[in-house]
Image (cartoon, rainbow, N blue to C red; front, side, top):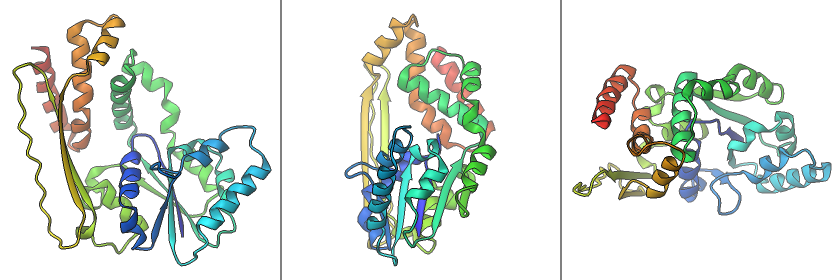
Length: 287
């Protein structure tokens, strides 16, 4: 079986890709090969190439030959994941995976539109210092949440499509990685899965201190686990950039802090709790 993971926006795609890349041997032992572009964490090169208008039939044939070689073991399963799949013609993707002898299964997660726009907007502000109000941003990117149109387009070329809601409250064990693995390896023992813990902190004043003590509780004998911690100050280059765009120091600092904590807000499922915490947080930032 060949699984094609369409990495939709704001659905934890990078987390899934890094997890499978870092734990490649674990999954090989469980009959699942995760295919990537060499040392990279995903399968981006081919779908990115197919987005171009000048690719040839010869290229399509060469790619198909490469994929048939990679997946020649009919008794194993294979996983390809890329954000670039979503921008390709489904019929072209289908063609390059033809004649492998494997059943093709497409996997995609869709995020609730309002949640998507909020999370995406925060990320854009944090990463590229977007100077644009939320309403304008949402209108410009409304095509990204036309999920039914997207599904119907892929349905024309693939008969087996698994679509799941990106919602932590309904994930397997409330965990995206576990939820995804439940699709590609249904009988996996979750206590045996490799795990890692990350603790990130930011210092907001010269007198601030952070004592970080990551701890793991391991309930299995044969399992790979890791943890890490990082502590630092606000990125001065990012702060300078925002101020050079006419944003005053206080507002610029607020934008960067909000970007840092947005991951925490995104991880909560109860909107009432989120709004309560964000209200107190905003008041704290203002003062």
